[in-house]
Length: 95
Image (cartoon, rainbow, N blue to C red; front, side, top):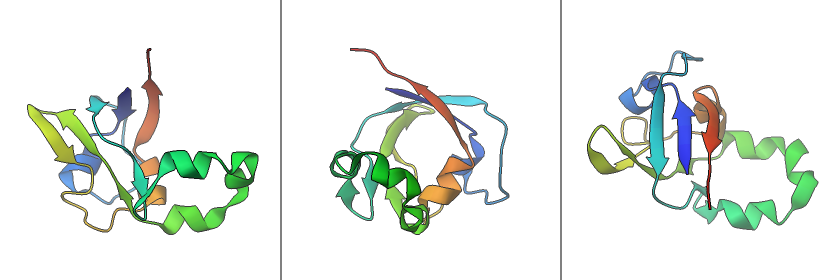
């Protein structure tokens, strides 16, 4: 899966929305407060209104800038879902 993001999130910038300017390859599970996202998806549409998720810590690894295991939160150790979403613009997945 490839994610389209604002590269500033990987540089540790916290100034809100960034322009979409960088593709990265997801190469790990996405964890929210240490829990795999797949288990959250089992909650179905009820997750859409769960505002408590926005303040939880987000962790995953991507291939970017020649680093095949760069942690999304390397420069922002307490990266939250809400903060990351300011830099997330979509994804492409294939099977």
